[in-house]
Length: 296
Image (tube, rainbow, N blue to C red; front, side, top):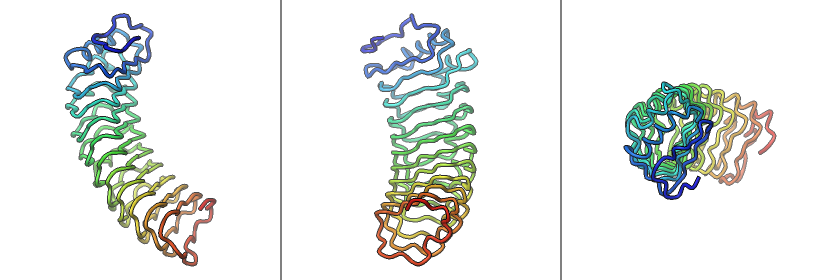
């Protein structure tokens, strides 16, 4: 299909279509025009599972814009790609009814705020990609209803803190991307409720303070990436309870000393990266307890 200069939805979309790719830098999608028409056409094409609207000029997602793509109409859309647009406003109920959606891609837009309940109806969503936006904080209630979410990407934003509470309802989350933000500390209890979390990426931030109990509640964690931060010291008990940790990356920080016993309890750790720090000497028994360590 020649997408350049597309101004209307083709009427000959096959009823057997499972993926519809409408990437086009010339489409602006008037909410009352072509996007609404598209949803109406797809209403009659019940086999369509994936819709790609990336690389357009969409700036606003009004309430109910995807109302014709809901499970109630017989169309079980499972993947929606809205990346590389100009989206700055997502109205309440913009995604209402997309209860079969499993992957929602919103990276490389201009989103600065996730309002309370924005994704509340997406109870089957597994992957939410918000990488490369203008988010400055994690809003209370912004991720309400996402109890099935497995992966959340918030990397490459301007988030400055991990508040206590907003992530606690993500009970099935396994991978959390918070890399390349402006986070300066990991407060105690901030990750409470993420009991199934396996991978936590906090690299390339401004972290200088890891509070006691910062990783309490994530005892199933297998990989923790903290490289390229401003960590100068590791408090006693910082990694307490991370019995399943397999990989820990603390490289490219400002660590000058490793107190004895700081890694106590990390009996399953196999990969520890400590390069590009400021250590000149190592204390005796600095790595006590790392009985399965294979790479340092």
